[in-house]
Length: 123
Image (cartoon, rainbow, N blue to C red; front, side):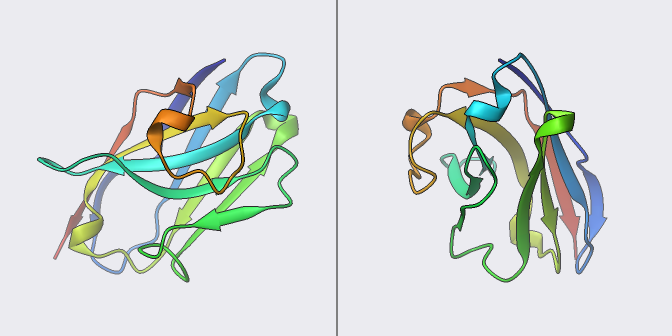
């Protein structure tokens, strides 16, 4: 599976960008997908995840109530709608696939990774 994240850029605080993670490969609908982010000088952290069939989602506390993860398996794409962005949301956002539970938050539990898309939130 190859993943391509997009949708990042410079956003004002309070903005609402939508990130996309487009996948190639015939078994994409068999994988759970997670979004992670990594700010400069910090470790990569879990943001949200969605199960293979889209029925289960899980969010880190930092995104609860502001971020929504969804997927369209017909388009081999997972989305991360981000609302009410804050400067502390500035990071490179990555998508990744997993064959494990969507409750897994460790990056080591994810197998295939996209290249990341930078989101910069200005105050």
